[in-house]
Amino acid sequence: MHEYAVTQSLLKLVVDEAKRVEASKVLEIRLVIGDLSTIVDDSVQMYFDIMSEGTIAQGAKLVFRRVKAEFKCRECGEVFIKPTTGFDCPKCGGLGMPTGVGKEFYIESLEIE
Ligand SMILES: [Zn+2]
Image (cartoon, rainbow, N blue to C red; front, side):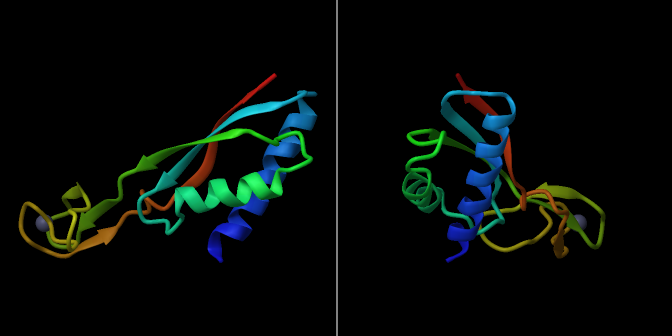
C-alpha cells in the first residue's frame, strides 16, 4: 500500500508544521500531485481520515492539484504534455522521455487557525 506510507509522512509534516506555528487546528491541506505518481487521491484522504484522528489535523480537508506529465522528445527536443496514450512526440513522432515534471508530490499550502 503505497498511499499508506505517503499519508503517514504527509500527516507528520502537517502536524509538525502546525505545532511550529502554534496552530489550534488544520482546516485544509493543499497538495500537488504529478500525473505520473501513482498516488490515488481518494486513498490518501481515506488513510488521512483514519490516521489524523486525535491529532491537530483531524478533520482537515485535502485538496489535490494535479500536474500534467511533461515529456521531452529524444529526436527533436520538443517538450510536450504526455498524450493520453503512448509517449510519442506530437512534432516528429519520436519517443518522448520523462522530464521529471509530473512526478511531484508535495504540500503546496496549509490553511490553519
Ligand atoms: Zn520530436
